[in-house]
Structure formats: structure tokens, C-alpha cells
Image 1: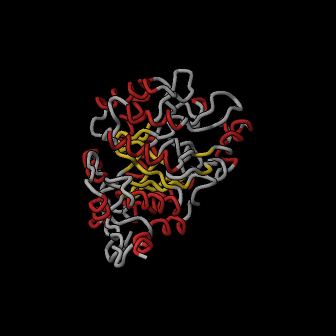
Image 2: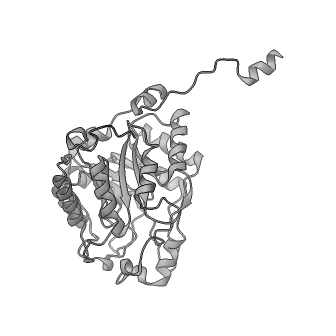
Image 3: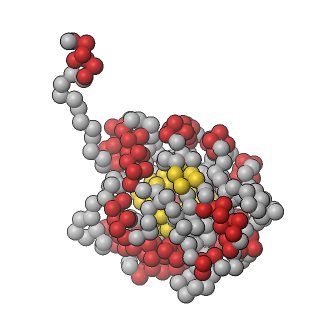
Length: 353
């Protein structure tokens, strides 16, 4: 991304897209009962409240009535159908893990199988987006936490802490290519969750190879061990490699969330908040997902930056837009075009010899 003179002036920036992740799949309902929905009605009301507060993208997971993360596609279908009625202008984004919460005390915290996650392309009604990780890697979401972050939560129990310390994101190259293909065939937009520069470069190579043709919406995820660090140097280095035609959302964990999002708002980027990322206000008190959205809206207004409504967010993300060729995708992203060979390829020269 390039920053020209006036890039920090709000009139030269896109309207702010606020993503909210208010379903906290890693938490137990008792961790924050005022903000962790359990019933389907509570899930829907959480979305409505966040939308009314100013969030226009909903990152969603689903719980069963026993409080555990749902792994049933039927539950996702029911929630999506209800949300299409309750918040019709909101961008509905399904978390690509489906649910990574452990089944029982001491069980593994893990993403579901490759085949199960492929089933996200068959959701009915279809979501607008499904998040897609690039490259398998560690997802140690407790490494950046402090004892104060986890006090009075289930993570204070050693067995829970240990299982999340060992969590891994499975996203091998062949699976990613096939997953993206299926999502595009179903007219569901991938939203790429990128944890570091090498994974961003892998995405660029996928695009150049023709494995993805469409708008590129990226979330920079700085939430734990194995990912980038939530600091301005890591963020700005990552930004240098993001093409001008892509959108970039910032996601950070716990009390790093608000400072990083404030930087993002000032720089013209987009933001993500909610109890999946953070439970705390700056003063050390619990902060609901709605309160987190309201805080970001206030900061944006202080900086003079307008907040996108749902229809504007869909336009900024290019929802329902796909490109016809690799060249069209590269041009829209403002990536440099690949070099054309000026002499015969090596295999051709060997044959000639």
C-alpha cells in the first residue's frame, strides 16, 4: 500500500468498515454471560445490536444450547437464514474454522477436518464471505495474553490454557486452492486471514497462478504465537506488501486490539473488534462487543472519518464481484503484471539443441 500526500485526510480515505466478532468461540458462556450468546434468539439479537452500534460485517460462529461451539451445518444454516431477515444489509462472514473449541475438558482445541470445512461452500442461504487461512501454522492464542487477561475466565484453568497453546491452523496449499475454488463456484467471497508476510506472498502467487480471481479482502491477524506481533513495525511492514487495490482490516488480541485499531482508523484501514478478540476496555473493566463497536465509531468521528453503512461495506468489499481472468485480477489489485519471456523457455531450447 502506498501513502501519498493527503492519505491521512479523511476525505481521501474509504469509509470505515467495522467487523465485529461477537460470538467468542474460545470462551465458555460463564466467562462473560452478559455478552456470550447461547440461544439462537440471542445470536440474532447480538447481530442486531452490533449493527445498530455501527458494525457492518458480522464474523459468526454458532453455539449449541449446552454452550459448546456448534459443528453442525444445520445450525449455521438456521442462523444465516434468520440474519438475512434481521440484518439484511450486513455482510455475513462465517469463520472458516467452523468451531475450534474443545469438546471436553482437556480435549484438543482444533480446527475441523479439511472435508468438513469444505462444506462451508454448501451453506444455505450462502454467506457473503467465508474466512480462509493461508499456510498451515501455529495458532497459540494464549502466548500474547497476560494473567490479568484471563482472570475469572475458563482460561485460568490449566487444561483449557494448555489446549489453546497447542492449537494449529491447518491450511495446506492443495486444500486452500480447492477450498477457494469451491467458494467461488458457490459465489461466496473468500476473506483472507493472513498472519504474516510469507503467507501474503503465497496468496499473491496463487493469484498469479490463476487459483483466485476476484477482489482481495485481507485481515492482518496478530493474535498469538505463530502470527505477526501486534506492533506498528510489523503492521507497517505487512502493509508495504498489500496491493493498493485490496482492503486491509486489522485484528489484534485483548488489550492490543484498541490501540492497533486506532492506528488502523487513522491510516485509512479497516478494523475488527468483539469478544472473539477482546474482553476488556482500557480501564480494565469488561467491554461488550457493542461497547467495542461504539468506541471505534467515536474514535472514527473524532478523526473525521465516516463509518460505512451495510450497503457501502458491500461495495467496498466488492461482494458478488468476480473477475474473468488473472490479468483482470492483477489490474484491479494494482499488482505489477508478470514479465513476459524475451527468449525461448529452457525446455524449448533443450529440444532445439
